[in-house]
Length: 180
Image 1 (cartoon, rainbow, N blue to C red):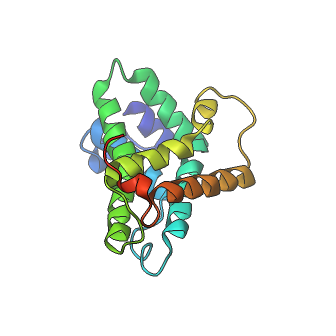
Image 2: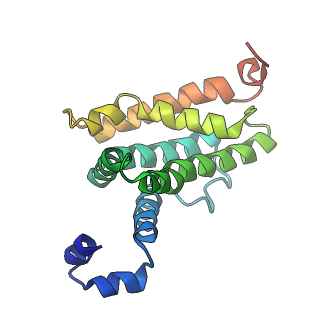
């Protein structure tokens, strides 16, 4: 909290006046990072094709994943997870789980309309984000160059959306088949 107060050029008392605990501050930081890169669900689904919605979510997610703040937050949590498991749990809940639930809720809406055939929206959502991570995720964590360009990220998101739709779009038998 001292470091936060110093960076904000306020007293520690001021920080505690806004956030009751370190956990609350950390959760807010991760939530704000996600909100910054996630389109609002309000109006997102109305009148838009699922491909456009997935593309918007995908670009935001990949921008967050490759942003300096996103990379720094992830590195911090990974390096401290063993010593501070609560911080890791908060990161997961306010970041990863929040995003998976956000997309799963959208997938459910398109399922009801018959646009998608998603048996398990939470798993499908998780797969979507895993595909988006591709090699970018590990490259960013390891500080490997080059950082992807805007065009490269957009092309990657388009390909991810195409793959997702090939599996879950419409009445695709692969998406509705039982156990393999």
